[in-house]
Length: 242
Image 1 (cartoon, rainbow, N blue to C red):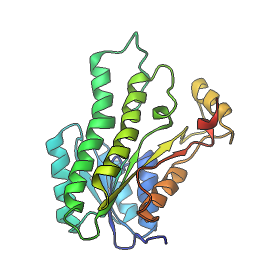
Image 2 (tube, rainbow, N blue to C red; image 1 turned 180 degrees about the horizontal axis):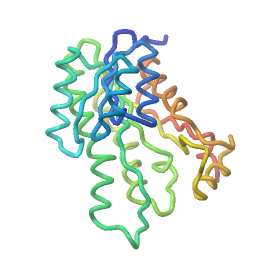
Image 3 (tube, rainbow, N blue to C red; image 1 turned 60 degrees about the horizontal axis):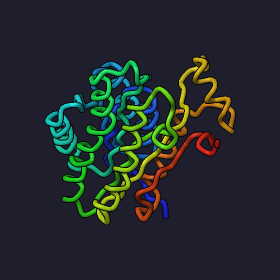
């Protein structure tokens, strides 16, 4: 039986714009109290929080101390944390002959290390609640089917996928942990040639939208908690291509 988000508190990281904003708006529409995390996009975060009827919280997730402060502030503000959506991430092309150690470190810090310590902070709160909680990690199709020129990014997102499965076992039965793996998600009809090639290879022949990713997140937050450790590719069938 589907659960309701009415009165539930959900923290969405990187929620000021793009996919994170779409997720925050969808969860608010479903009745959730949404905590909007941002790093530097203050104006956009405040605007999203206003649309959601929620609050904005600033933190640099590269700093574990700031992660712990963020979760403490959310708990102080709402008294509880029912769900975490790990959306914040970095994405950029890094050909191996041009990649510097700092490029690798930045991508893995944002995409894997931060996600892990956000899960840790959320679990510490959720384990103290009778109702437990839910975690949804955004991974990527790149973590399932690697793209040339993006090895550090692909590796970080593959790490999120395996970490999701590991934490689903470790945190059960109190907390469910799942992942949404977006394919090509665009917020404009103007595409770079490489993006257009991926769209052309997608069986549905189009890019996805932030709203479609939000639907998948909403599913994991409202479906039976018996669903855990699962990776849902929202990619128009691109992962089916040989």
